[in-house]
Image 1 (cartoon, rainbow, N blue to C red):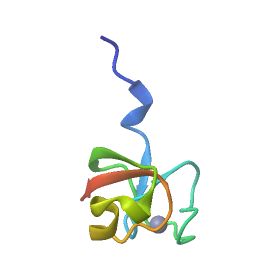
Image 2 (cartoon, protein in one colour):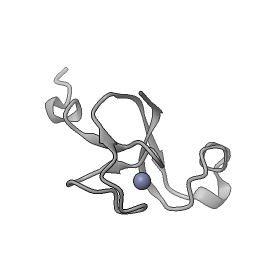
Image 3 (cartoon, rainbow, N blue to C red):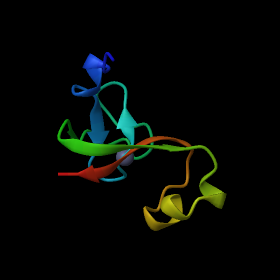
Length: 68
Ligand SMILES: [Zn+2]
């Protein structure tokens, strides 16, 4: 099984944990990013997701569970 190689390089916003494509977070607009994260989380409907509520996620998208 081939694992996605570019996942390691994927950046995550330290503020909202959103997986970011590019140099700045599309939610908070911050460039406070890290590649040191774990746990892939896809939020489709934040209103109905307990995890999203706990993490203060209001927009659907891809997020990291843990950010170091
Ligand atoms: Zn953010």
